[in-house]
Amino acid sequence: MRGRCPIWGGAASFFERQVVMQKLKYYGSLILFFIVVGALGFGTSYVQRPHNVVIGVNLALSGEEKAYGEATARGIGMARDKINAEGGLLDEAVTVVAVDNHGSAGDAEAAVKQLTSRHAVAMIGPNLSHCALAVVRDATAAKMPVISPAGTNPDITVDHRTGEAHEYMFRATFIDSYQGRAMADYAFGQLKARTAAVVYDERQAYSKGLAAFFKQSFLADGGQVPVYVDVSSDDSFAAAVAALQASPCQVVYAPLYDEKAMEFIVKARDAGIAALILGPDGWNGRRMAQSLSPAYLQNLFYTDHYANDVNEPVAEEFAEAYYEKYGELPDSYAALGYDSFMMVAEAVRRSGSADPKKIAEELAKTIDYHGVTGMIALDANHDAIKPVFIMTFWQGQPALLEKRPTVQL
Image 1: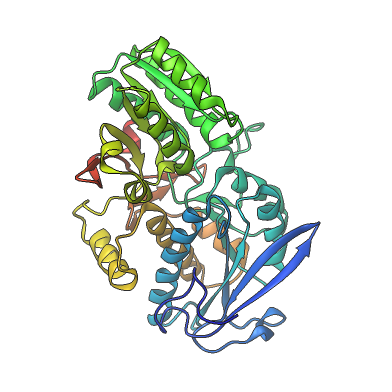
Image 2: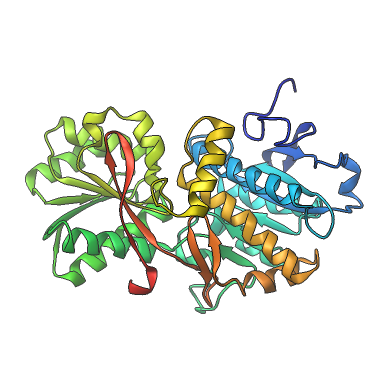
């Protein structure tokens, strides 16, 4: 492959050696591998006898959801650079082995086996909830700690049948029940909405779960939800718009990933729907700001993990370093990727070992980690206790309205 990998490329100090790409087939699933060789010049011989700490990455680096994976990968790369500049982990440079899961649950599951075979001591990702849910069984069997930077479905870390936490599953983000309630409370309390419509994708565990959490919380606050529409089929937006026109509501909650969210926003506004439109972290506000004209960014509100205007030194330093490297400000996925890697690195340091079980034990003890997305502590379910950011758009850019501590949700 000529040139630099579009995901891990950049200045020579980013990943100083070559990126080797190869296609492997596991269980009929074609998976794209990027083997990122560490700064000390380790070759592929480390696969059989690694002397450095290998951290696996399992993200959608291609396909419809690649924007999330690419941003997360950038944040991971910045964290890796920082750790290696400080001497690495266990006196060795850190190597990152990344697998492209294409946004497919099956490929995400198969990636666990590939990363295990390459002696990864921990895995960062998947981001997407349906992909993260798919890796639980194999990661647990392999005793590989997994931290999802942005997977918000509650079942990623907790067995819904027993209510017990999965021993090897962690996350750097808040869960959907938190952000669904945060937006419902904000809509009822600050926006003074008393009627809400919900437009969701039944096929997506992420969207379906958020829709239910928002509705439950908004009803508990005293509001009404007369419109609850599934937009999973290709022609369903027209029906959703018709339902909104027939039963006008003060706000519309649209827990959709960015591409579908933007399509809905445009169709709703073009049809004359003037209600405030609310969304979740999956909107990817920075990408939305780059993709939609300013007219469509009016009266939008969403929950997120990070803001460039948060006025906190750690976040500001990260934003400045990211801008210097990439020529643009980071989004929340880059920030979550950075925090996820640093949380794993801290666990390795505390354990003093590359033993995945010991790393998992230390990850579970994470408390008061001062990340770029805020102060993070993991609870008994391995979920991050951290602020939920309420965002809007101001002059065409994401802007922070307030931070809601999850302890109040």
